Length: 227
Image 1: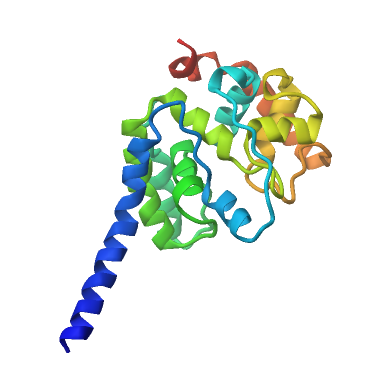
Image 2: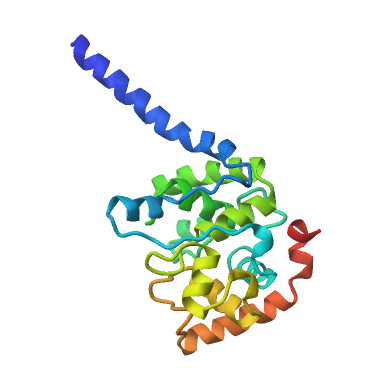
C-alpha cells in the first residue's frame, strides 16, 4: 500500500511539474536572444521529419506582415491582456445557445498553444491556454510576443516562422514581403495545409484582398509595436 502511495505521489509531482513548466519557460523566453521552438517543431524532430525555421528579429520582419496578421488574427492585440474577453463571451454565449462557435483565439493564446500545448480542439487545452496567454502577455512586451508568434507559426508542412514562409512561398526574405504577399500569408494561417499562400485559390485571394485593405488602415491598431 505504501509503495502504491509513493508511486501516486511521484506521479502527482510529475503532473504538477508539467503544468508549471510552461510558466517557468515564459520567464526564460523573455530575452530576445532566446529562440524557442514550438511543440510541433519538437514533434517533427522526434519523428525525424525535420523542419525549416530561420529565426529573424522583429525588426527583420516586414511591417506589412505584422499589420496583415494583426488584422486577420487579432485586431485588438494592442489593447487586450492576452484574451479578448468580448469575443470570448460571444463564443460562450453561442455555445450555450447551441449555435456554431467562431474562433476567439488571440495572438497570445495562439503563441502559448504553439510553444507549450498541442493542436486540436479540447476543453482541457483551452483551459490551459487561457492562463498561459494571460501570463505571457503580462511578462512579455507586445513586440516580443509578436516576434515569438511570427517565428513559430506554421505556414505549411515543416515550414515554421515568417522567414522560412516568405522564402518558401515567394522566394523573398520576411523583410521584403509586399502587402499582397503578407496578406496571403496572414489569411493562410488558420489552415496552412489547405491554404497555400504561394498558390492561392479564388477564395484565398478574396480574403487576402480584404486583409490587405484593412492592413492599409491599421495605423491606430499597431501603435504598441512601432511607437
